[in-house]
Image (cartoon, rainbow, N blue to C red):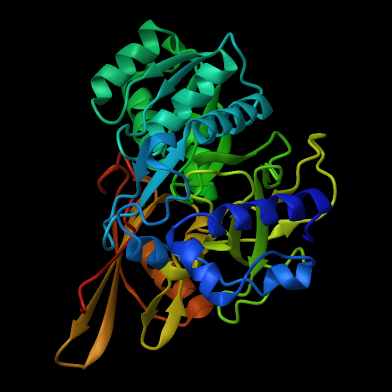
Length: 412
């Protein structure tokens, strides 16, 4: 996807904003002699930015405006290292709300809707992002936050919430509880706006069936506003993103070179109007592809495929590179198997070999022994690794309010 003239103009304004600041990137650009871009080729010569940069600039080294213009900060969880802190100006907050309201509108959500918000509030961008968008749209926000499933279900019934905002993991937990308690006829849910983690077709199907709702994938990340920079539509063929706020590239994660439209690679984002912490060519590690052409839903904004995983999700067993998405593709094709699984990686001192143990949920109506054998054979045939497989009843594995951890590596 080539830059248009308006995007080029906005990127040059962002570069000037950085050069005029004493920020981490302002210093870097001055040292590199970067003063603007005049072509696509110029733009693609600009250095990538990364989460490592943001950690190096901790706490507020990426801030590109004076302190008195900052009205809020948000932060990543910091579970894999020093946290990342992102400062926002009032305009940044309003722009984010505008994008999020667009997301709701594209999903057919309006002022008459009641949006029950279950993601976390605080430093995390999720809960407050869903609320910002609801208020900008004029819908009723029900700011539940995470956990307290009893209260969630009570509010769902008593307030007749029409939209649920959640991670896929928590949406699944709520769906299972609604089914278990026979509440489907007592709730008024019509739509679900799901974000923060990649999820497979089996999980999607279970949530849709148990809750009787239409589901929409919302996209975003803490470093670039938060959730709300894109959402799927009723055509169910990818995610539209707001290219007047972000410019999106797809690159080969190994070479860093842009790939042709339609080819899978890593998403790289450039903020076009962000003031507090502008980011140019930020590597997200999310894997997707640009979907060329017009969408059947009629929306004119460009779109990418649903997120297939992350380039840094890869794990290695017996020298074979694997991704959770490959495992899910295998499980999706096996009747009786649930969407929920966990992988534990270990090291056998006796054989001096890696060990891969899969725990997979399945329906009681199927032979667990046969399912274990089928999964083992399919993983070996399609991926090249022979796992040990343990089948457990549906509901055995823990459910999460945030992102579900699929792979735990005990080798290191």
